[in-house]
Image (cartoon, rainbow, N blue to C red; front, side, top):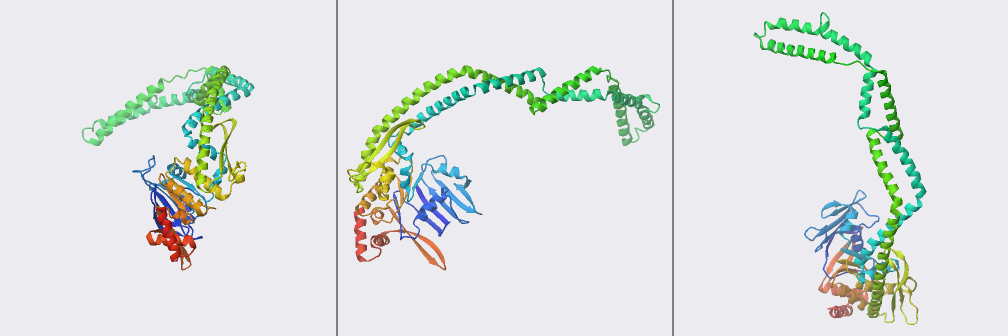
Length: 530
């Protein structure tokens, strides 16, 4: 249930906290005071679009909610306007609007002043009938099969429509595979070839440099080795006299050994090569560069591409053999889809008759004694919801042929039909909000409607904005909305009306003024409701 509406700032409502009751919560007030702002504030928190002001902030607290978003069965959502942008919060942490909507799914449901417009939707009659008939699980089962059937149907069409394209693609892939397989590419090959090519291309210069280096190290009169030997000889007689000299001597000895090692390493170099090897490497590199440029990838990418082409070729070749399998599976699934659609249709037809009688019974109690309500089912092509086209037909008077609601029903009649369908089919939301669902009715009809709404509030929390005293007297918690203007600033005031204050509000709603006569009438109304 929605336990608290906290409004720090929203339009001309400031610093208001409304504690709600589990049953029927009614909001009343004079015309123009902004009763519907309460609903607007709730819708604002749930993501309603519109022009809002910086620092607008509304918080909704829900209790006894069991879903993955709650903490200790408590769900707190909020929205703030900051620098012209919306910021949403879920249990005190930043959240996205989609997360907020998911969190309140099946928790709260709002029916605005023109909620009956949903009666004209093509989907609404099906939703009502399927909910009433407890068909939602069976519909989900059907939808899984139907989606599988459509998937197979589309795959079959794709294979048939692209037969010529498939053959062309096979030819192209075969050519590309032959080209890549003939190249016999290896990972890291290009780098090795480039290093070998650079070595062979510069071998004469390298040979000359190596010979000179060897000569400088050991072979010339004043070679590096001879100079090191001379220095070592100079220091050898003093190595025991000073630690620094000893360290230097040791380092020079190591250097002499390293110089010799470098010489032998250079001496082992092989400068024998053939020009044919150089040409062969050059041709190989040209081939690799050509393939890399053509396929816009490196050697490793070309090797992966080769594997991908093999997989694609296998799929394309298998498609021809898979077509009969796909067609067979499609036919098998179609039979299951059709059988389940017929089963759903049969249940709908049975439940439609029950729904018609139940709606007519409720409408009769709402001063529409001669109303005729029909759930019309016509067969249609198989779709995501079965094989039925469902439409509500209505006639308010005897002798009038029932027709679609948008053609024959008045605003007051639509409000009553909308309420009745909500009474019958609501099996999900914990909190239901009505904004002036009593449009176009009064007198005894209003009393009947009040009883229906009160009945609904026994199983669900109901928030209701009304201008009818006949409905307001059934409230478990009655709030009065007013507004005051001070220093050119307008602020809304929302008070819980109890005892005498409630009697005064009912009296005002009855006659537009508060006097002893209207107060007496108000007391009688309240007593009769209790």
